[in-house]
Image (tube, rainbow, N blue to C red; front, top):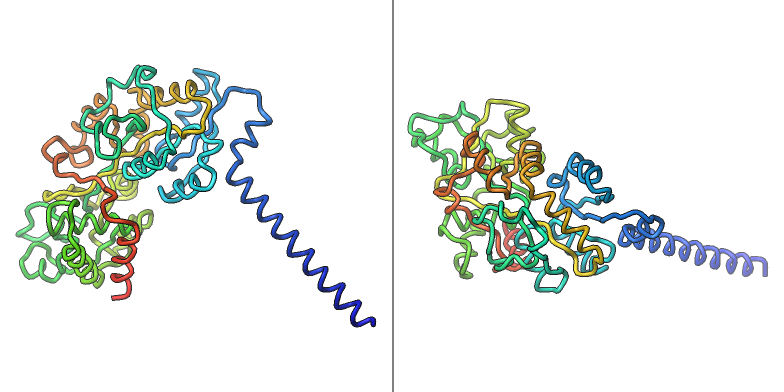
Length: 373
């Protein structure tokens, strides 16, 4: 009888313990998803909740905006567009007033009804935006997004490896066997390469190298892209973003695909490396601000958007992060400093945006084939 009693006692104890654990986890998840609303509930101040990439809205800008307007800005950060999208699929953006999706993610969120239209009449600085960034496929009339900056991917290389027949940087430095370049005296020694972490970026970059385009790719062409990336893997040291400077400065890799804002950080460590946009083209990313459909603070948010695209704050962020400003006057000033970081029109026309024509499932399938080839 005692044994039966003890067994029942242990059973109910274990059941109770598991229920408590589940409840705690559910509370943690709920807090994570709806924390902006929790903070807002206990505050009477004017405030907005921003969900942003880590390197596009600085604490300096936030402090200045709060000082000028008295509007409190609370920021949470995300690392990947897919993280933002997944969260909004669960809570529909509840509690957030402003977000910073990249180009292709704007199209996905716009089509899913997650975004609110932006009133251009409330943005006094909209006339200063670079017209080259407007009217793109992901938001043809910019009803749902305003560009705040853009990034371009280039090739960084150790200046000591170039050979007598080296003329200018092209995508062959990433996709051709380094031994072939040694034989042709383009470089003077074999090297290892770092590529970016996002398979989508690599698929589209390979498409530019092979076909000079990123749209209307056939199954045969996608198969050839997979073959190219599988072959390239033998001279790729790492697929990384933040780690690239360490591989380069440590002499482990001599060539890498890198965004101009990450190149800025590398230059702060070493002046041994050269950054150039490939003459046969590359990919660019337009970073935007957008307003979640559920926000009820549209007027406050429009003030913050207008503040972010002003020349003063755009220049602050261009200097701080090395990004290309959406404010045309800031960008034009930066071109004079370094046209590789801030490409002129002739190079701009060779830059391609990531699009949603290739599904994530297809990209994952390609990448799975590459990794296990």
